[in-house]
Amino acid sequence: MLDLFAALDVDDKEKAFSLVESLKPHIKGFKVGPRLGFLLNENEWKLLADAGEVFIDYKFYDIPSTVLSAVKRSFNLGASYCTVHAANGALCLEELSALEKELNSIKPFKILVVSLLTSFDQDKNKLPLSGDKTSDELVFKLIDLAYSAGMRNFVCSPYEAKALKEKYRDIFLVTPGVRLNSGAVHDQSRVATPEFAWKNGADYLVTGRMLTESSNLINTINTVKEQWQIVKKG
Ligand code: C5P
Image (cartoon, rainbow, N blue to C red):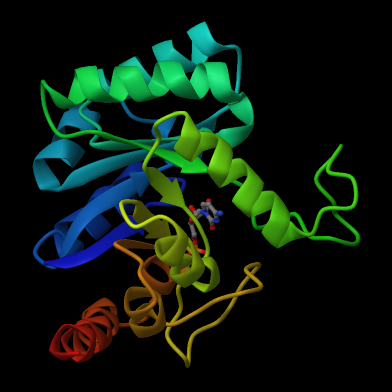
C-alpha cells in the first residue's frame, strides 16, 4: 500500500466512488474537501472509511469551540485525519492537542496543522498582517506556535519537509503538490515528484489531478509504485 492519499476533487459522487474502487487496492486513503464532502450522506462517508483512511480537508479556522466541534464531527464521520489552520492560535491549538489525545484513545486520529497556504507568496499575494516576514519565516513561526501547543502533525510542501524534519524530529508530515515529471502542473507552482517528497521526509503524499485526470490510472499508479520502491531500497 502506498503512503498516499488521493484527493477526490470531483463534482460527482459516481466518479468519486469509481476512483475509490480502482485505487483502494493500491493506496492508503482518500482526501475529501468541501467540493465532494457537501454532496455525501453519512452512509457514503462510511463507504469511504471502509475503503481506506479518510482525510477530511476543510481547513477549519474559527473560534475555538467551533473548530473543536468541527474536528469531533469529522472524527464521528469516520475520518482518520482532518485539517485546521495554525493561525487559529495557541489557545485553540492547545485545546486541539488535548482533543487529539482523547480521540486517539478511541481510534487512531491525526489533526493536521496547515501553516501557510501555498497560494500565498511574498510579493503579489502576501498573507495579510505578515509584515516583512518571508514565506519561510512565516511557515516556521506558525509551525513553532503549533508545535509548542503540542501539535505534531503538519501539512507542508515537499520542499519544506526536510528542514522541518531536521528541526523537529518527532513530527508527521503530509505533502501535497506532487506530480510525475511528465504530468501537468495545473495551478500548483512548486511541485515535486513522489520520489522527491518521500526522500525528503514526507510521511504521506496527497495528489489529486495526477490521478483524477489520468488517462491511464493503472500506469500512473505503477509509476508511483516504482518510485516508492526506489525510496524504500534507499
Ligand atoms: O490536484 P492536486 O494534486 O494539485 O491537488 C492537491 C490537493 O491538496 C487539493 O485538494 C488541494 O486543496 C490540497 N492542498 C494543496 N496545498 C496545500 C494544502 C492542501 O494543494 N497547502
